[in-house]
Length: 157
Image 1 (cartoon, rainbow, N blue to C red):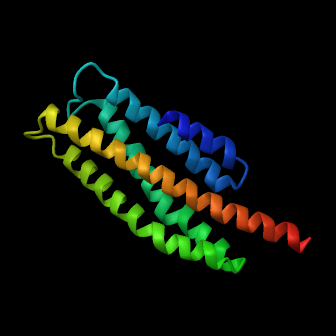
Image 2 (spheres, one colour):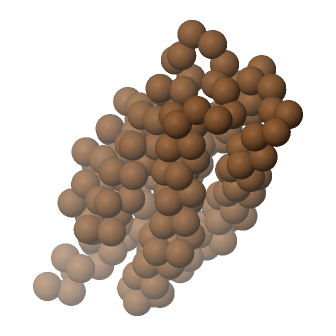
């Protein structure tokens, strides 16, 4: 998962400062996830590492929904990019569904009472799979919008 994150940053790193910051947050999220996932035992609900992961997770999904996706959609509209807008209509519902799972995971982590580390480990693994899917969807959206806008900007010159 970390390797695909690095590849995305290399490909899209200079596209826009907002996306740069967001991809850096993605890298931090993947790193925090890997620290939890690589531990010898399942994570305990009250560990600082899990709390840090949840903080980064919330920051990442919030930036996506309230900053990055909005910016990408605005750019698509500005360039008359119907293909990008159509892709966004297809991809956003799945991203939103994954966001709901991430928010629910965070909420459950806040409810430390009675949390067993085995079920938390299972939920963390499932969340990791969904985040990987989300990253691929986001990369697809960035690629289509960036390429369409880059070509339109060059054509305008």
